[in-house]
Image (tube, rainbow, N blue to C red; front, side, top):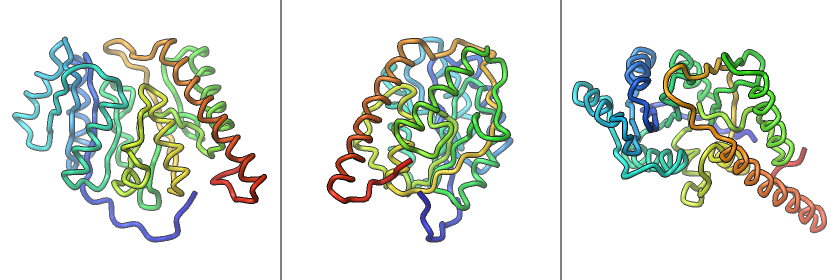
Length: 260
């Protein structure tokens, strides 16, 4: 999964923050991000939030040239929001693109560590399920669901990644170009798994660094049983296709991209 060639310095950093009804949480996150990584540019990607989140973001952007608001026509899902943000940031020449939630669950204090880890990686995941990682304010049932879902993903897709569903992560621009964003059609939380498996298949170096994930204290969670079921269905389909590919490669004497 590693590449031996040296990697360039981090360069220009874009932090992408999708929003939908985050008017109460967004100001705190913007203020904290500006403190932790003042050199970064922030893109708020708002899906026409009915609570006025986009207007609040515009107020911040009017005072701070390092903040840009991307207004979208309506709610189309996390994946499409990020793909739009990727497209804009890549066109503007940013070298590193960071995914980050607006609700406070992704603590800005972890940003320097995540960015530093790109020194020897193409993708860095802020992981809850590696040594040193943690989750706060989750019931045991949700912890078990997340751990179990990630273990299932790891086994089905044959990836040495412990938290493939994590949404706090950084990509080198070269990594996003290598994984073929034009072919990404997944939405919701399986979007993160999709990008992870594409990075692994492309032979990129994926590192996990521990973070403490804090359950939101403002607003409502976007997670639902339907979203979880859809993610598991997609992952099962990908996993079966992966295993069938392994069988075909063995029969044809070819080396598959990864084996457990």
